[in-house]
Length: 317
Image 1 (cartoon, helix red, strand yellow):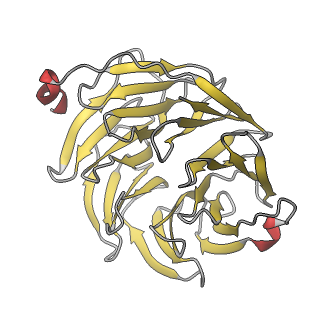
Image 2 (cartoon, rainbow, N blue to C red):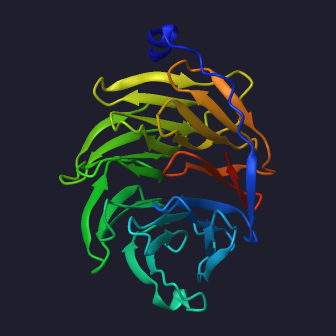
């Protein structure tokens, strides 16, 4: 196990992260958020049917787009920063081009790209603005061409709702991972559509999967109150992050830029910070007043953003 191997590694010093900003503007549960590559802007989506684009420095809302469907479960920034994608209970994933004009009606310009037979749980651009990956309650993931809305590849292998996906952090990679209600975390080859590895170590839904910055490993968060860490080259689970006192499900996770810390949001309103190597909990972040739906480290690694059912987002640093 990783934790035994890491016994000789220096213990991390005390970590003090505090809430620096609270982003208020959604009228209901915030369900998803994503950072722009410019490290400054972020997008959030909510059960209120709104997608809001924020400047994290000034807290200005640059745009608020009202969608016809509430429960916007997923949102993502395009790599260029010139568009966002979102999807949810309407079974679609839409791409909205952004503009500098604050008064422009962005909702009128949105374009439907993906169509599933059940809700869209996750979406992610793939190294370019031109292709988008989606995960769905219909048990599949799919790759779409943004321009034409054409289905390029579909991925069948989960036997229940897919709740999360993550694309490998590499310009040339073709691997992505997914997690779902069948308790599985699957690894996919994007070109062939094949499920190349599968891990069934959790005893409940896998709510979130996230690659380690190295691209050689990934972590999963589950309703079973644990997070697990898998090495793709060893083809096995190498670590578990859990405590007897943690009894609520883990909803979302992300790694620090170095990959040494794992930030995990739980349904008991807390964010726990784990030492990836040692397996010990380094810190607990309190502040949200309802369950955490999303945690994301900013692209430069200097801040953490969390989205919550308390209808706010918090930036920690």
